[in-house]
Length: 136
Image (tube, rainbow, N blue to C red):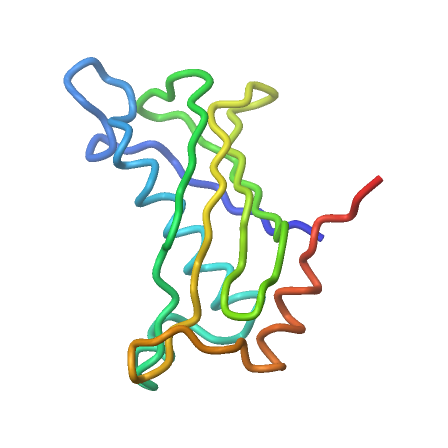
């Protein structure tokens, strides 16, 4: 099962050439993850921070395919590729219409209040597993 979210390209996302400045895509990927945790996992970043928990990005790998411009709407799709002991690997794709703009793989790590990697709580692991990509 995949998670979907739309992001409209705003002026603050763009460089002087009028296309998305690449670090802004990383802000968008974080927003997609944050909303995924709130809407699908049932544990918002706000609640995590209040509990002293975190899920920082440990790895990010991006393939940029085509530029995105001011006013366009990107359709983001997130799938879970792997749930590890203390990490999760997501793949996100952003499209404008049928055109693939970028593919991102990122790894988040579950951090305990002691700021050390810990095992996913079973409730969260189950929610993540529900979004595992189905292999053909």
